[in-house]
Image 1: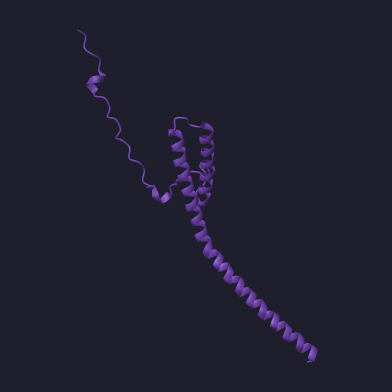
Image 2: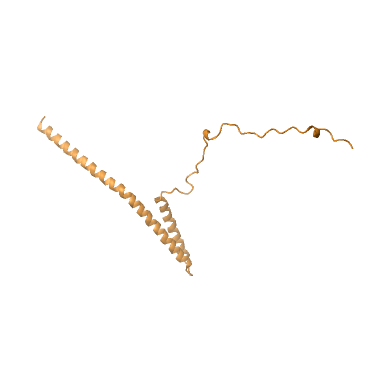
Length: 136
């Protein structure tokens, strides 16, 4: 093999090593990011819930005031509405009405194959009741 061919092989091997190192570094970064994602997610959920509690307190304080500002109460209520939507998404809850109720189906094994027992047949009317009443 020529010197130039040997040089090309050395360069390719060096490039392969650097690519393997880069892949290892990226894998480590991805593992760190996924490990931190759960903590970040739960921390944000906690912060949103605290903000909702604070806004609830502020609305209660505003309503108790003798000169209650309706516009301020409306703004606080809309802020709670927006935060509640964020909290619902962070808590992985579906939107109301988005899930259909589960229909329970009965498997053939759950039903007995025996027929339903019937009540006994009515007795024929008594003979003396069929005869005509005596003339008086």
